[in-house]
Image (tube, rainbow, N blue to C red; front, side, top):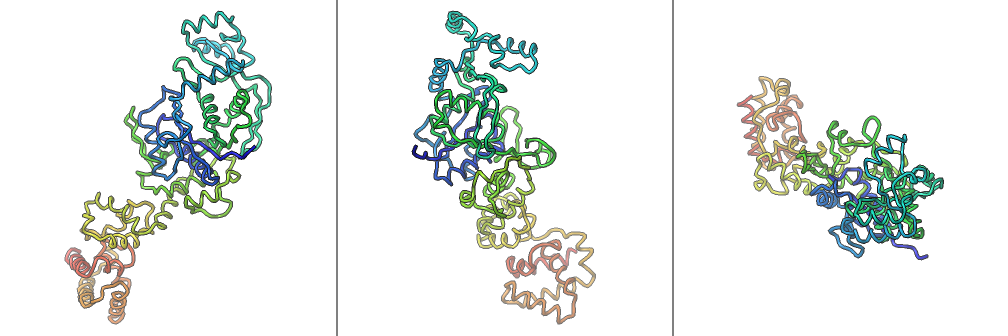
Length: 507
C-alpha cells in the first residue's frame, strides 16, 4: 500500500478560551506535520450546542495567529475536505449512524434521563453495557413494531454503540506502546442524539478523521480511555486499513502539589493559563493571557515545546524551525509534565536578549506612550541604544521603563538611602568641579569622557567610588543603571550638566 501523506488535526470545542494544554497539543501537531511535510487541519468540534460560547472560535484562531502556528486547511482556512465545522456536517453523520444501525453494530435506546437515574440508584456503578442493556428500553429488547411506533411519534432517542463484552482491545500508541483495555469496562457509548440531530464527539471525530484522511491523532492523555472505543468504531465501519496512529501526550501538572494544571493555579501563583486575555461573555470575568502579560510568542512556543518533550540533547533555546527539525514523538514523556511557570519567565528573558535592540524598541514604544513620553521626540536609533543598555536586566518589555526611565525623564527626587550613603558635605563642591571638567569635553562619547573624568579624579586624589556614585545619583536619581558614561553619551552634555546642577541645588 502506498504511503499516505501525513495529515494531523487540531479540533477544539468553542466552549471558552483555549487552555495552554490545548496550545501545546496544537503545537506538537504543527511540529509533526511540518517535519513530515504534511498538513495540519483545523476543525471545530461544536456538536455540544449547549456549551457553545460566542467569540470562542475567533479567540482560538487569533491565539494561533499570535503564536505563529499555521494551519493548512480548516475553518477559516479553506480546503477540499470541508465543511470543517461539525455542526455543518449533520447529514454526513446521519449516513454513518444509519450504516451502524443497519449492520447491527448500534441500536436505538429510548431510556429517559429519569429512568437512567433510577438504574444508577438501583445498581452500584451502573453502566449501560452488555450486562445491563437487555434490561433497558431499547431496540434490542422492544418489539420491532413498538420501536417503529416510538420513532413515528417523534419520541426522543439516542443511538448507542454495541460493545461486545470481554474482548482485549489493543491501542498501538506512539508514546505509550501497546495499550490493552478489556471491552468489558467500556459502556455502550451514545453516538447520536435525536434531540439536536447531532452526533457525540465519539462518532463525529471518527467519521471526520476518516473522511479527512487523518493519519495521526496526537491529543492529550485525557482522551486515552476513549481510544479503545475509537478502535472498535474503526473496525465496525471496516476502516482498519486507514485507522490513524494514536499518540497520547502527557498531562500538564500543577507547578506544586499533585493533579492537573488548572486556571486556579494560575490565579493563585500569578501566571496565565490562556494564550490571550479572555473576557467571559456570561460572567464578565477577565482572565489573563500570555500576550497581554508581556510574553513574546516565540518564548511561549519554546517553553511549551519542552513540557513533556525533549530534543535528545541539552539545547533549551530553539526557534520554531529548530523545533520542527528536532521534534520526535519518541522523545515525549509518558509521565505528566510539571508546569514550571518560572521557567516560562526565564525563556521570555532569554528571548528579549536574543531579539535585535531595534525590534525590542518597537515593542517598548507603547510602554513609553503609557508613561506620557512623546516617542516622536526620539530617534529609533536612540530608543534601540537605550534598550541595548538595559534589556539584560528585565524579563518583560514593560519592565524596561523602570530600568530606563532616566533616559527620558530627569529625576525629580533622589533615593533616600543613596543620598545618605553617597552624598556628603564635600559633594556639591566636587560636583561643580566635575561640571567644569565635563564642559571642557568636546567629544562626549562614552570612552573619551570616561578617560578624561577618571584622569581628573585620579589627579585630584578623590575617592573614585564616592565621586562616581554621587555623579550617578545626580543623573539617574539613584545608584543603579548601566555604565555611567554610556548614559551620559546618550542623554548628551547639556542634559548631563543640567541634571548635576539640579541635584546640587535640590539635595
